[in-house]
Image (cartoon, rainbow, N blue to C red; front, side):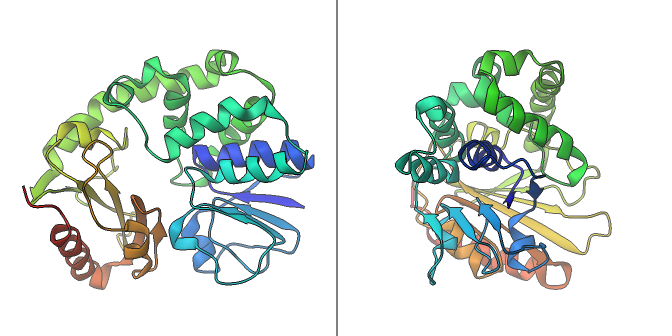
Length: 299
């Protein structure tokens, strides 16, 4: 039996809950959604997938993305709720395999994964430990596997104060605070506004800057949605498109997950991503932006 999930805060909390409920001590298999969609992930019978698209080879599946709404019978649970961790938590509390010990952790996971944040939480994450901790999780490659596993172990046994005092976590949190200051400058320099959509193009930057993904909604408050573009690898053969509804100006009428499912991606109603081949990426990006523009409210 193996836990298979993605390396973001929701995925990490899913792993915490599954380990606690099922007493699983095998290595966690960390994968990205597009690896499952493209059948590149090595999914096996007995695997428990969480916060990922369904794969018929797995034995249990838990998810909450609208683009992953199942059309087949499966074991596990799928609900359109704030987090996949919430789905796992509800399932195993109903069976008596989890108690109330993780209620607070799941509460904060719901807030973070559904982007139900205030402006103060976005601008000053250092005051909000769960939010700052979530920002230390980078999921561009597997070089951080040891850190993800470290967080799973700590979140299972320690309170948030003890976790934030951990030397590795503390160092990463300090780096995130500095990173966000620099990231705001990159956003200002590489973002254009088209209608009521902000388009941040990092394709000309190497390395690609990272930082607080919600800052764009504070910097460009007139927008209702954001588009971010970057290459997925140094060879520049694929473009990653990330889209989100503004978390402060909630007037975008596009279901992002369903829109990006047309392009091989997916996500939530309010946020998602897809990976496009370079040869026709710009054509598809223009199509996506046009859909967002048409469905943005007129001022």
